[in-house]
Amino acid sequence: MRLRHLWFPIILLTLAGCGEDDEVKLEKGPFLFLDRQSMGFDQEFGSGTYVGASTFNALYIENRGDEPLEITAITKSAPAEFILQVPSEFTEGQKLTLQSRAHTSIQVQFKPSRVQTYDGKFTIQSNARNAPQQDILLSGKGVAPPNP
Image (cartoon, rainbow, N blue to C red; front, top):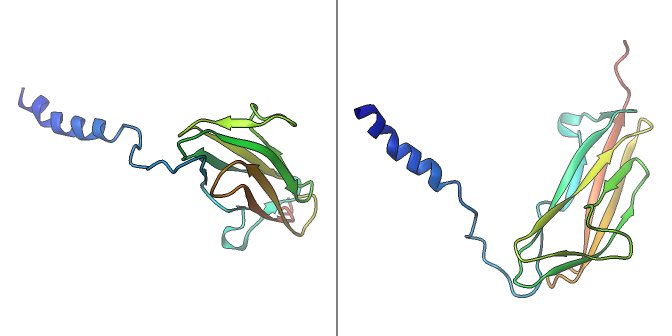
């Protein structure tokens, strides 16, 4: 019997941490929040991505404003080795609308075709008051696969 009661405070503390993060204050108007300004692919410790292999990364996008955020364009200025996968709700010529506190992501695949360094960017255009045009830098390094 006593053991059951000892677990009760632990369960309460665990459940208390499971709510939404309402501490983020909303800005006036549409507000573009990104979890990063650049995306690197397998470059930790001077390494890279094997030629012909793929690595993936994602950019988290959230509207932290009190009005709808409209993403009107996503354009890439990068080599073909960087492949963008935009949200399915976003189609060319149409805008993607994120209501207050709504979020989405852009997936990026890096598949080097040669041993070299690759750089580029993609640009998000929106009606955000804080960043109507936001560049996300891309970088990757193609390396030779090990010999069998």
